[in-house]
Image (cartoon, rainbow, N blue to C red; front, side, top):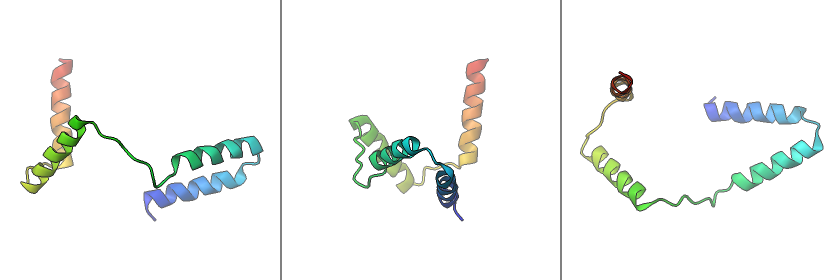
Length: 82
């Protein structure tokens, strides 16, 4: 079972125990407002440029592992504190 499936199942289990009508109506409204397949994300020109640069990095195999990135970030932050 994936993480998303576990979260969904857990939420369903919790919702089934709720008896407060007002709470359930508010939750229903929240879910119906946010769970849409027609949701658009508008990107700034800078964000579009960053995505293009990322795609070029992937195409040209200019990649590092998550572990290496974590080490690099940790080292950078450590220098900033010092």
